[in-house]
Length: 452
Image: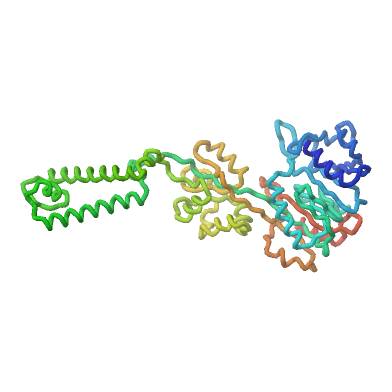
């Protein structure tokens, strides 16, 4: 089992006789039980103190009963090195049963980026991600819901090893939201206009056709002027096509029919010559579909040309990611449109309606877009390419921290959840007073920040 293997990695580094504390947080009550490495496999629902953790199945699902919000596995506080392993992120309902949703691979990618900030700040702390909603009251023992870190850290579970002591311990809370922002665009459709045939060829092809027609006209006009062959039947026909009045006995309808015939003949000759270059073969295989922004390059091109407009609701993508782009792709998207304000809407349904009408593309997270794709099936699609970003939601640093200027450029965002928004992933780094508890100063700083 995936969880069992991960726990054995943690237990293996602590010795055979070490004890592991399994903590299940149920509302405001905390149940603790100390079990050995061998006894951990027998964890089940029979014990009263373990009734809310029904057993280890896989890393993706851990069935629970009650309101468990997190599961933390860590060694005793007496160990010099703290191995903190946080498993659960939030609750989900599958087939009417509650399951804990565990850390996704994408969130682990976000944690790799945090290592760079650890190297900058020279922290001396452990790491534990958790879903976080500020409680109405701060716990007296100095712990946050599902979080207590202290001492050195070995977070190899997050593909990062931090075991050496740090020269300086900075205390702050650094929440991170990892998002994949996609866009929804209209499904491709076949041209329905009466001028569909005119759109099959590209602009260079039509330019070549027009240039060849003008060249032929100029050449034949020159021949008629140089050679006074008005009695020649061939030149009479060409003269009619070129507008030369060689024979006044011909009617206007006859002249028009001859010119139409020659224009058609010229177009057929052009098609035959075009087929020798392989263009006609590609024409036969070409689907007459309207262009759609199914790739980010096409999206940027169509947005810049104004052929399609963006549509954004008042969500995290606007408030945080687009306003303060931290990745190269988001910055490129931000610079493509000169002014985003006309494209902000208060309703995501309005964005979906405009996308179905082939007027706009809708930006949001995958979770929101999947709902609209299901309701407008066949009319819209989600881009296979996405725009990913790591959004720093906020941080707390002591006034005397020499690293405050390093993190000053990060975007400040309230540590609160908005209704319907995905829960942010909080990463906490802070030192303790040596007993595993927060100092009074750190407790006061965190309380002020979280409840502001």
